[in-house]
Image (cartoon, rainbow, N blue to C red; front, side):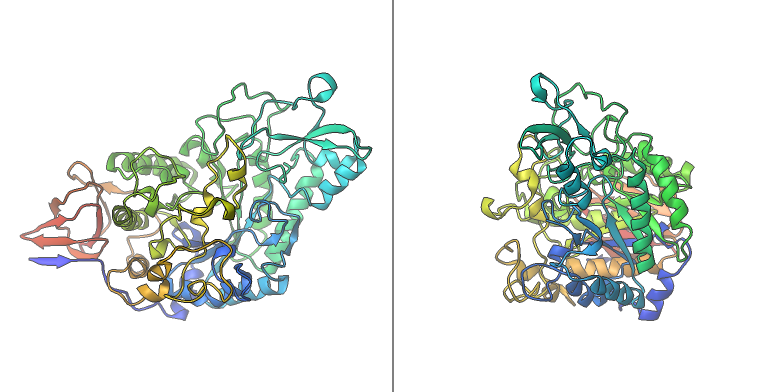
Amino acid sequence: MSQHSAAPAQTPTTDSAVATVARHRDWWRDAVIYQVYPRSFADSNGDGMGDLEGIRSRLPYLRDLGVDAVWLSPFYASPQADAGYDVADYRAVDPMFGTLLDADALIRDAHALGLRIIVDLVPNHSSDQHEWFKRALAEGPGSSLRDRYHFRPGKGENGVLPPNDWESIFGGPAWTRVTEPDGTPGEWYLHLFAPEQPDFNWEHPAVGDEFRSILRFWLDMGVDGFRIDVAHGMVKAEGLPDLGSHDEMRLLGNDVTPFFDQDGVHDIYRQWRLILDEYSGERIFVAEAWTPTVERTANYVRPDELHQAFNFQYLATHWDAAELREVVDRTLDSMRPVGAPATWVLSNHDVTRHATRFANPAGLGTQIREAGDRELGLRRARAATLLMLALPGSAYVYQGEELGLPDVVDLPDEVRQDPAYFRGAGQDGFRDGCRVPIPWTREGSSYGFGDGGSWLPQPEGWGELSVEAQTGVPGSTLELYRSALAVRRAQADLGAGDAVEWLTAPEGVLAFRRGHFVCVANTTGAAVTVPAHGRVLITSGEVEETGGEAVVAADTTVWWTTA
């Protein structure tokens, strides 16, 4: 009889080995990409706000964690009405994050460590402080700059009603009426998100010209790719027709709408792909495309368009074996015909961390206000991570999930900054909880985040989840991630691929084979007995083997090799 618990840390991969892996052909097909939310990763100057120099100082940590690339949320010049997703200047770094020289140094250091850098691109909308929009307002009706956005006269007597019935994702009308230079109420402009984020009109040629130039600017800086924000939202249906329903709008809906997932977006991406392919080094595009189905998502990753698209259907799936298997099968079946890799993701900066989602009953959505059962949530989160990393394709890790961080669900109202929180009938507005700065040390004014506190308050006891507290501790969540990524890199049957071989398993258990590799995930609340499939590589919880069988603890995933 033998017993196994979460594997201890593996020896960190050497610099040269990482660099070799990072350079291999089609690296993105099996890459593990780590999302950094710059505000909340590391603060180098003690102002309470994370910055590029802070990220740069922590790059060796990411190299040793075992990821292949780093995706940076926006750091562009911005009034920060929506945490940088309201861009005023796409070719400048906001002073709170540093300078273009800092960005250049970060990219160079990352490359020296064998890491690639992917930056956010926000093409659906700009800031209302963008020079184009400011001039459009100042010049008044008839300004050619207004054609680069969606300005329309209102309906009703004296244009007092919005041009159509669209609602903002953040709540309230998707239209705001402007005051014209002469002081009179005037036209309305479209904003699918906050009023400070006017939507571009992608039918205007100047918009396309500008973004092709922006792409080249950052590619020339050396970035390895772009994550495209609201990639499904740039093109609107001709005539901006009424939606006809006033149900609360969500990013992940069940239907194609007049403003989301319009077929015209694909012409834009075919043009962009031609630019990207001019550059060496296998640069990539990643789509944030909230589509009704994975089949619609596959349209974004056809051979002449984008390389990857986030799998939000997988993110939104409950910790349930039957549901997970269905989503895995549909994902692989959808991606296979277009030759694109599947992607797998559990958390990001817009949803409640999965350690908290899984701590609560199923059916509450991706934004949850309750802490739930912390122990249960962490156990399921660890198991879900090993399941995700065992599936064929590329995986995304959101900063702090490797520490098992929960969402901070009890932030005081007065510190919240999510714009959706201040508008009714939109997203729940509790995204701040997943954006609290991460802990690096057990003690300090912000647990090692910086010397001057943090822009969102960190909870008491945050230090016990820190990198310092978990490093070298067998069974810690951080060491589980380090070990899993090392094993994933070492196993030839893991990573890229487009299929799994499902194995017979008890109800509530997922079991599949990939070559000599076998993964078993017990999603039930009780231990189950399954065949022992060889040598245990790693497990998220307790596994006891005897007589050719293995007892897998509740909410536990185990990896075996038959080689």
